[in-house]
Length: 246
Image (tube, rainbow, N blue to C red):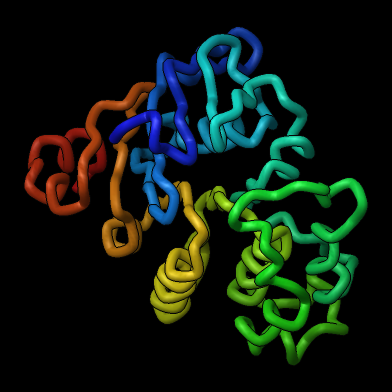
């Protein structure tokens, strides 16, 4: 995958928690309009990679290029203003705010940017997000903490879309969801891609990741041990067994 054409390029990043060496030279690339999935067992560094890209846990070494701009060391809000949104593990909605108030958070003065990329044309607003997620439209006055797990995940995704991002970072969006909602999550991600957004996806549900991803990376102990298309990975019995337990 050519770096020069990439929306996001992560090149040889090394990220620590204190003295704990977590990401040990990770590189990956994501093109505009792609879903790229990060696969691996628990504790292998997938969420740390998401946090490094989002600016929450900056790498000590290496470069992260987003839309042609080096962003390592940028504050998270500044990265968000460039056109990146996060759907964090555990949803992290504001439980005491209403659905409507949660959705409006990305429209605050701090979150807005005066200049945005192709994804910032303004397709998404309160009306279009509620149309996309009818269950949220029925609950705009309910506080976030009163929603079901599936509804909270829809709210987290809807909140990200409100920022009209070029790239959405999704960390375990199917976690804790019933199978019928996992299927719905697959359709939501496909729809987001069709609408022009890219997704960097961390997902433990192997079937979901393989169904939606255009390209996959397998992480073990903070290193990329395999990358390829889902079809190519499906034929790698040793990688599946050794690194994914499949």
